[in-house]
Image 1 (cartoon, helix red, strand yellow):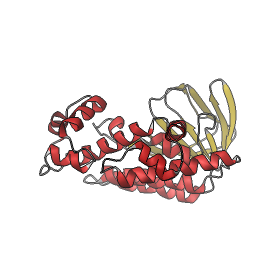
Image 2: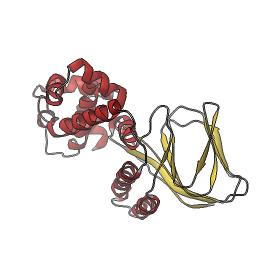
Image 3: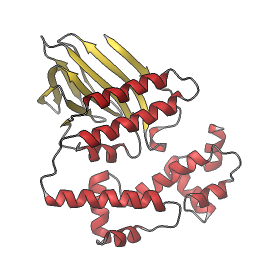
Length: 277
């Protein structure tokens, strides 16, 4: 049985948001309970509080157990099942977004690692309880639930037991974290990728390759996505003009901003604003 399950309705596509939460819940069931084989168009994480079972992906079987976080990536056929005599208790959350992959990689997930050890069971349970409480609020529930999603991912990052054994990986992750912090702080001005590489003290091409390998998109696209997502939030403020919004996210040229916005969002800034206001 489900202790609870909550789905969030939001017309804004995940490609326009830093993170978008789809649904979450807690599964408390007897042994032999299964899901799949099936595929999703978003990420789904489940944390096992009690029990053990089987996780199958790409025709490979993995044993999963209490204290582990398991990631189901988009567009991959997966299957999982509780052991026959083992009662299962797990929390799950489904989400997507521009920076979803980057957050997951910080926790230790990768294209070849979908199961991580995580010691923060009680803290993770608290994050899910916060989602449940947030769902009861009709006025600001969507914001509270999204905040709980960030809290959950932050807890997974903090308490995951993954080890970066190679010095190269440690250095690479350090560069990426510093680059993302730099972009977050400086996105509102005309910052260049070469400037970020100089700040890090590495070659521009080398930085671009490191960033794309780690995050999944080039740093220029990451910067653009961040700016456009910020602009989408600003468009909810009726007082601001499109030109003022453009300058607020680093585009002095309003026409350039409009062209970039339409290219990446598939709609002009003016029409986007009409749809959300």
